[in-house]
Each structure stands twice: as C-alpha cells, then as structure tokens.
Image (cartoon, rainbow over all chains, first blue to last red; front, side, top):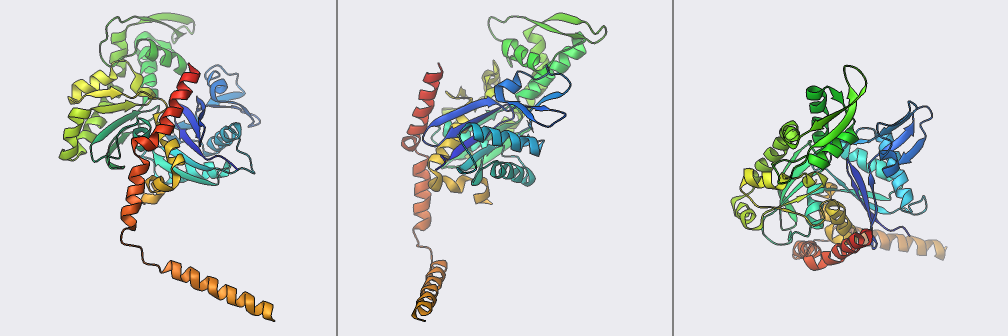
Length: 334
Length: 62
C-alpha cells in the first residue's frame, strides 16, 4: 500500500512530504539530460551542480519557470524520478497533493495533474501555495481573524489574507528570487562589462544582497568573463550596488503586498496591525526584506520558523487530514 | 432458473438502493458538520503532529 504524498513543486526546489513520515525529499528542481539521446543523467542536487558547467551534449535545466511548467515532458520525467526515489512504483499508486502558485491557468493546472498521474499518482489534487504556507507556518487560520502570509518563491511572490480556513484576498506576481539573480547578472554585465552565471549571481545575492541598508556590510569579489576581451576578470561589488540592481524587483514584490492589503476587508485589516504579516519562502530570506516591507506598509512583518518547508508542511497536513480538508483543493471550489 | 431470479432480484434491490441514495435529501446540519470538521482539522492541536515531525526533521538535519 502506497503512502500518500504532498509535493511542493517549486521553481527552485522540490520538497516531498510522506504521510505518517514527514519530509522525505528536499532537492533543487533541476534535471540534467543528454541532448543527443534524451536520457536523464541526473536530477536534484547533482543536476544543480552541473548548471552552466556542462559540455555541449549535456543540458541541465529547470523545467519550471515562474511556477509554471515550461517543458511538460521533462517535468513529467522529473516527477516520475522523484516519486521513484520515495518508493512509488507501478504497483503502489499514492494519492498526491501538489502545491502550485494561485495564479496558474487552467491549462497549467491540467499540465501539473496530468504529469503527476502519468508519473504514477492514483489521484492528484492541487492546493494554492499561500494557503499551504499558512497551514505549515502554524498560523491560527481556523479562527475568525485576519492572517496574512507573504510567500516569496523562486518564480512567484504571493500574498494572501486567510480567515476561517479560506482565502479572503489574494495577490500574486510572477516575480521571485530568480528575478533578483537575473537583475544582478544584468547589472554586472551592464556596469562592469563582465558576464557571470546564475549560480554566481545567486551567491552574490546570498553574500551581500539586501533590500535595506544593514549593519556590518561587506563587499564581494566576483569572477566572470570580460565581454570585451573574453578573458576571466575579477570585480568588486558593493551592497549599495546590489540594492540598486535589485530595487525594481523588490519594489514590484512590495507593490503586490500593498495591493493585497488594500483588498482586505477592514475588520481583518485591523488584525494585521496587531498580529503582523508572516514571511515564508526562500526569497523571504533576502537580508532586510522584512524590514523594507515593514517600513513601506507600516505593518509588522515576522519571519516564519520554517520559511523553506512551510508550504510542503501545509500540504502534508492536508494529506494527513485528506477527507476533512479536501474542500480546500483547487478543483473542489470550482 | 432460481439462480437467475435471485440475480435479477439482487440487481433490482441494488438499483433501488443506489437511486434512493442519489435522491437522499442532505440533512439540515450536514453543512455545519462538514464546516466544523474542516475547521477542526485546521486547529493547532490537529496540526501539532505535522509541526512536531518538521521540528524533528530539523533537529535530525542539524
């Protein structure tokens, strides 16, 4: 008998929760393929290490962009391999709950459920990421009070107001921490004339990236390829430069939070001033982001204790209480 | 012959039961009970098990 699963199929990472066991897999959403034969060479962490460092016949790709499947066939193969790794076979077909961005289209929804069913799931249900995040972050969403959750992922940022087990207001933008990395890459190319890879840009973001000036800031030495000479070159980047480079992306995320606050009914809006908003997702770990949101919205912002796992834990809770919570699944409300 | 009659009778009874269940009027408090189950399943007590499991996972990782 297969144990049912909850999957957070993120643009950056994929997490799997197994009913009765907890989180059993946490890997980057990357797959490496042989370009000539189409064979899968690696998935997860091993494939992530290959990004930007492969010979011509290997391609290491992220099959999801902006929370949406960009390559259906590759995503299906990745899900199939993930399910195999957690013990799903053709004889053990589990029920699966998959977390998806709330803004996905009908076609994208069908693509995700079809990919899971063809990969071995007996039944595939979808749940919105901010709803799952609120459950996983242990917010009191069973009470008639306003709970606000901001989920900043790799490709999407979603803000939701939740009360009495349901979404009251929602705002989503297809902008996330990968757009911050891309902004750093394009800034370094434009201002310093060197090309850097996406992994280097991510390292710069983690090392010195911030949304607000911080105490004890350091500079970062970055190596890339000089666009004029083609030779390797090193430049020094400052935190101010990175703040300037990523400001457009950060501002668009904060603008969506403000739009969500404006949509909230006044009775719930007053709760946020007391209870604050909760930040989850890997993008929320950007230094100074909570402070910047707090400054611009005048509402306290708290970081979840489990920012990276909140979404899959919420979906895992839905798998544990499948019958009582099945009305929360996306298909059930249509 | 009696075997065929028995099968026909069973089929008719099954059809009647299925039709009766299909036309069953929902009890007045069914919506309330379903909503209560939904809210109870989201209570902090119900979520404790998953949260504890996550904490254990975190401790194991560290």
